[in-house]
Amino acid sequence: MTPLAAEALRVAAARLAVAGVSDPERDAQVLLAHALDVPRHRLRDALAAPLGQAAQDRFQRAVQARASRQPVSQIIGRRAFWKHEFEVTRDTLDPRPETETLIEAALERPFRRVLDLGTGTGAILVSLLAERPQAGGTGTDISQAALDVAARNAARLGVVADFVRADWFAGVTGCYDLIVSNPPYIALAEMDALSPEVRHWEPRNALTDEGDGLGAYRLIAAGAASHLAPGARLIVEIGPTQAAEVAAIFRLAGFPETGIRRDLDGRDRVIVAQWPG
Ligand code: GLN
Image 1 (tube, rainbow, N blue to C red):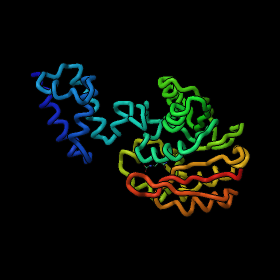
Image 2 (image 1 turned 45 degrees about the horizontal axis):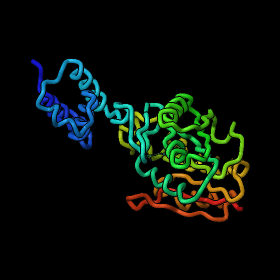
Image 3 (image 1 turned 60 degrees about the vertical axis):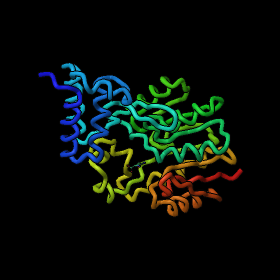
Image 4 (image 1 turned 135 degrees about the vertical axis):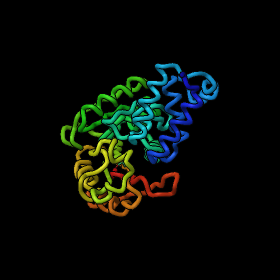
């Protein structure tokens, strides 16, 4: 018997609830819209109709993946960030709303050449370049698979950027008036407390430095001097408890001034450092 879409939706939400998913109704709706290939706001019209075999199979696979706590964005293959949708895979950190704080900080001032260290999906770099069409930019990542995703995101959104495989600054040449990064900042000791979605499905080397969570900032601070133009800015995302430590690392590396930006939840989220001009 072919079930009505509404019935399939109800069964799926119940299954996701049992699996411990935090918003099972919403996720079931998003996955059903994906399986039916309709925008979510059109789902209501589809609910009274029978679910065809192909859509049923697609929905089952998606619900199964979500029940194993794969993030919705990885299952549907995309995530909205700032003003665009970005392709997301298992090789990339899922762009998060709090990272938009970094975009806002970067756009406070003009820039001509931007370097994004550990670009992942390219969400930060591509969003910045889409806002400033006169600027050029480079995104680096240690993962070639991530760089491929970033390059596809840039191309799809009509943004021209260079993508370079590099371990932080190793292999990066040139001078920039803006360097941005959302580096792995979760301490090894904090990894076990992450949700299964993050811990089991997102790329581990995008989350943690396997140490105290500050290792990437030390490397970025050490390498920045030879790649920053006079007066350039270095803007990084941080974990909410890391502001004082990251600011201290940057001041020690020669940045006279650092500032903190908070995210929408009021948590310290971004450090802005300025190179002497
Ligand atoms: N904000 C991410 C999380 O808490 C961590 C990303 C990162 O380390 N840059 O899941």
